[in-house]
Length: 391
Image (cartoon, rainbow, N blue to C red; front, side, top):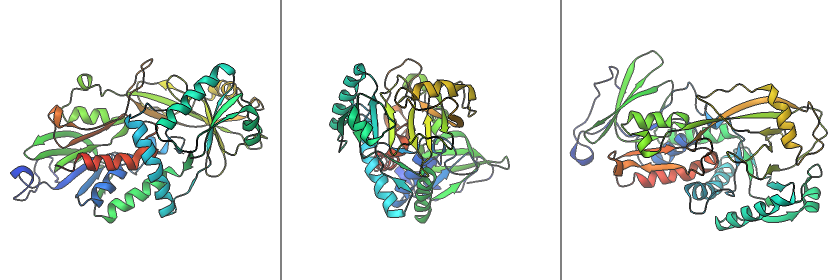
């Protein structure tokens, strides 16, 4: 990047006859999606610069989620969420095996705690099979109790392909791959402007020492998570017109206190709630049980967990874990979803779009990448490479 914010060294040839850019692609955001995209682009022979506002990788949603490898159950057929999740699931498992990334394919059960919910579970199964999710099995209450003695439900959907992963280790593997193919990562660089220039874009970022630096590039990949709508706006897009305005949605997590007699060997989810998947029980790689997240729309990202929510979390989890005791949960951490759907709105799909039709050739927006974004990351990365193949 050049040091005065306006001047930058350029060569003599480049895309469509213009000046040669400093980089083929600038990726904005070093979360799991940005790093996966950087690795895929660099592996495809593109020169790549990754700009990250924080002082380390994967500091946003990548570090504040359930670390679940989703099977692809919940999403409408042919949606990007369905397609990216089912493809990404296999790519994540393959990557974990190849690079020794800690993970476990332990499975999960979606439980109906009353007869009225059993039909919902059956519909989920039907939709998930249409999405190509393998190994699904509808089971009754007796089978649920055999698999998970502490769980009480009348029916359930067993998903053997669901798992958990060390999200930071997964992100590090993409960083290592990107850098092995000569991609460059610049931390502590907050993007403040994106200008259209001949043959591409000029991206201006404020570095840790307060300097405004610039880089010219042929293409920009916006993988900025909770800031991705701001980045699209900086590039010149009208957020209201294109429907890219994000609605941050906070989710708190509580952990099961040490010494509890409750035991689980796989993930347990209730039927989905309106704005999320309900207060579900997950395990980390050490076997610790966590509950969450809930859904709370917020004006801006905040990460404090309200201890007073513990009672409500216990009440919600007791629907399927009746042995859960008062005082058994302790505040753990919180995350914020980059939701495109506001309060009370219906399903919104991922935005993974090359914006030539909107007048921004070479700009790829990845916006609204909430769950199953972690699982989908390697498939999203491949899609980004395809979108930029002709540029």
